[in-house]
Each structure stands twice: as C-alpha cells, then as structure tokens.
Image (cartoon, protein in one colour):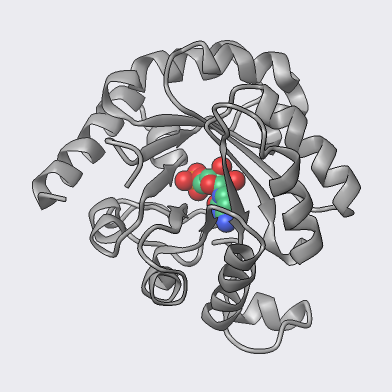
Length: 235
Ligand code: C5P
C-alpha cells in the first residue's frame, strides 16, 4: 500500500472552478485527486497543474492507447506534469506498454505507470458484443500478467478481480479500483461495483470514487463518510 488514504476523487468536470472547489472541500478526507479525459480534454495540462497545486497526489487518468512511439511521447509529457500516477490501456499490447515505461524511466520522482485492464462499465455481455471471448475476469488476468511482464507498476481493475490479480501478479503489484458505490447507491453506468470497505478488504491499494462524492449534495460530507466507513473496517 503506497497511499495512507486510498481514496482518489475523480474530478470529472470541464469546469476548473468546480474541480478546485471540490478538491479543496474533500482534501482533509481523501488521499488523492484524479483528472481524466473530460477534465484533460477541456482544461489540458495547465488545468492538471492547478489541481496538483492543491497538494494531494495526482492521478492523471490518461488511458493512452496508440502506437508505441506516440504513447511513449505522451507518457513522458504526462510524467513531466508531476502526476503521481497515470495509465495506458493494457490492450495496446506489450510493445506499447514497454515504450511508455522506458519513456519515463529516468524521471524523478517517477510516477507509477498503471495499465487499464477491462473498464468497470463493461460486463461479459458487452465484451462478447465487441468480439471478446471469455469472461471479464479471464481478460483482466491475461492483461494484468502482460502488464507486469511489460514493466508496469500495476493495473486498474474492478474489485471483483482483485484476488485473481494478486494471485497472478503478487503483493507489490498496485491495484487501482474504480466502480466504487455505497450500499444502495446509484450504479449509473458502472457494472462491476463494490462498496469502499468491501474493495479495501479485497485488497485494493487505491479506490477511485467519482459521482458518489462529486454528485453528492455535500461532497466533503460524502468523502468524510467514506473515510469513516473505511476506518470502521480497521483496514
Ligand atoms: O463516478 P464514478 O465513481 O463512476 O467514476 C469512476 C471514475 O473512474 C471515472 O473517472 C472513470 O473514468 C474512471 N475509471 C473507470 N473504470 C476504469 C478506469 C477508470 O470507471 N477501468
């Protein structure tokens, strides 16, 4: 476990003022902040630097998936932003992942490079419809092993695949888990979900939480409630 508080809040908004306000409000209760494609497309690296200035570890959820040369350049640019962690799609293949890892090897401090396995919004039915044979769990295992072999630090997976990833890749491989929902909460577009304490008990290193905090009437109170739920588990 590399972060004392495992909760990273997903600031999925094109509005910098809104993102900064949520970031400041939740800061006492969370371990990090995440900016993804919506934020980065609207606000770019300057926006990401403003979020980094809040003073928590920044996860740049870049989800790169392109030819190795292009991903290597994008990886280096992202590492220069000061992100603590960023990611590429494992389905881009071994050469692409290796190119990304090599591109950031000499950057200090080097961010964690994580591979997205299977999005938590996809279930077995969706995977079949895009030509993926076998279960989500089998695909996550295959891609996690490939990511480790390619020199990456960990994977994004759902809480349901944590045990498989730990068994295949060992205790030091970082696991980043979105699809976190409070008991009885709105699933929205997520499918393979778990509560914060269930995911933590299952061994997640980082919990990515978006709308359960950012769409709550009081984001700070929602973040505090999650922190308290996690503390109550003793994990
Ligand atoms: O609002 P919610 O809690 O569903 O947000 C989850 C966040 O995690 C989003 O920012 C989404 O882009 C991200 N994510 C995901 N599944 C992955 C990787 C990242 O949901 N496999």
